[in-house]
Length: 303
Image 1: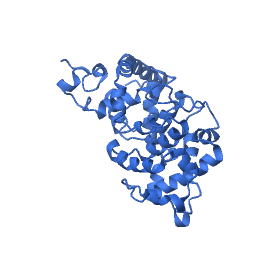
Image 2: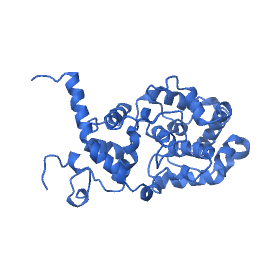
Image 3: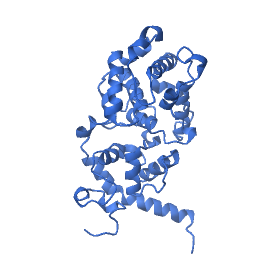
Image 4: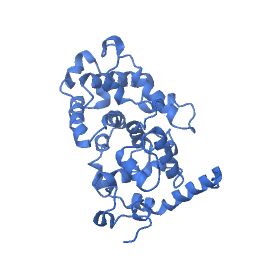
């Protein structure tokens, strides 16, 4: 059998992406964002009109956004209530004085000292750089290059902070390390990409506070919902949720919108999360779906 050369492979990939343009644009345009925002983690930073508060709440929220929103949201509510103005609280944070406020915090891998460590590291990052955006930019040597190296340095700013007062001996807890996954480890880093999407994209539901980073550089926040949707509509055939899968899905979306490839993330995620997609053929659920024509469960079928 004649093998396909790289040009023909790229041509087929581009053609497949372009076939998705109309249905994905329609999904993006018509999606009920207002109806879903309150069921999304983004609702927590959106509460704060002050950009300084919103920035630090967005990072803390994204770091904890593993599992269902109602579960980590309950734990996060207690932390935010203890802070008042999150930016001012972190700026003036004194673990000897303030750590007790988090004594009741618990969420899966994380315990009170992980929140204390977050506050100490964020305090020192803000003192050194002035904002989280400036910290990110300081570790971003190529503003037109891939986002991975800058995200790695950003995560390391928190992982390598002086936390000896929180973790005796300097050994970070498993829970704290879980908050800041490293791109170099090969995982999808979904939560950090989610944080970047919120901060960088200029259109709702995202708030675009970081004007120094181009939306074209973002990678899709790859959770189980987006993974299943991506496989269903042919954005990837990979079976493992990794950094490479996130790159592949994003590259297919970039063939449709190179300036803003991750704009489809919220709608794709919530279509699956809401039950509007069941990752199988369902005559009732699939009937009104605008992605049906490009879904692997329906291609080549009638009815």
